[in-house]
Image (cartoon, rainbow, N blue to C red; front, side, top):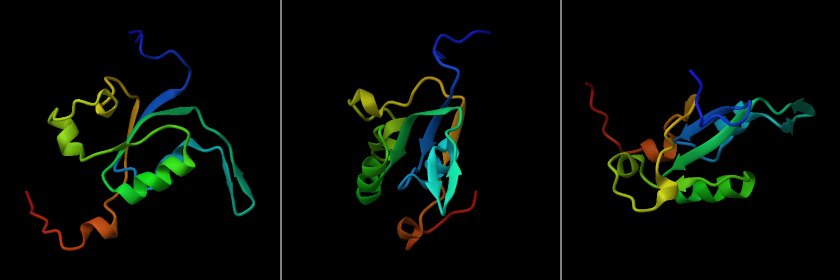
Length: 112
């Protein structure tokens, strides 16, 4: 089945709970760290989301693409009139960062 949304050879990546973008950067590649080159990989980040304003600021300073600064629950519920906040209709891969310690303190977790 051919998908018209795929116009490049790159796999489309959607990033949730993106934080400052460390997981995204490691996945996408194209950087150097500790004298080691990490080549660019065949992935294209098409959408990223984070609720924390400070994390979003850092993300925007380090990536060329934008990040949606909003609560994912509000986006999923359709409570946004901003089209850039809408989830893309298609992605090959969904990345999800882990909960940050900053956001987890004082949160009561309920088991299913």
